[in-house]
Structure formats: structure tokens, C-alpha cells
Length: 85
Image 1 (cartoon, rainbow, N blue to C red):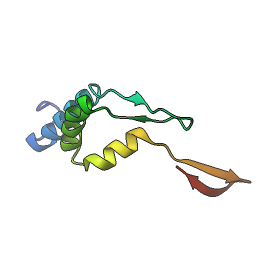
Image 2: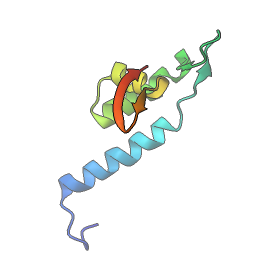
Image 3: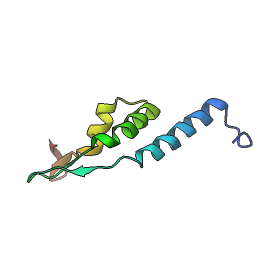
Image 4: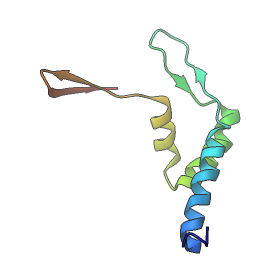
């Protein structure tokens, strides 16, 4: 990495992203019961999710919500409509 001119700070950012992605790979998701579908992060995966949030420097509740929910946006004639979570 030094040969291509990366500074120590830039290398640490790259290492944090790679480590975060690897920890994210350890997170298991379980399907929620019910007719609406969806999923949740079980307790045994919370440690990996917490480490991932720390490495990505994001709040854990925001990371968990973004991984377990989706937002759809309606479109009508090319115009953006309502957001559905």
C-alpha cells in the first residue's frame, strides 16, 4: 500500500472497512413470524453486529434497521410518490 502512495490513516480506513465487512458476514438473520415477512437479528449475532457498527462508525440501531427493513418508493408517471417502509 505504501508503493501506491497510501498514508497510514488511509490504510487504517481500508482495514476498518474490510474488517467490518468480515464481521458483517458473521451476522445471521432469522425470518420473523407473521404474514408481513421481514427478519430480525438474533441475540447470538448481536456481538458481530455491534463490532460491525463500531468499525463502520455508525449507530448500531441505524445499522440494524437498515439491514432488516426496506423502503419502497411508489412512482406515478415518472414522479416520485410515497415512501413505504
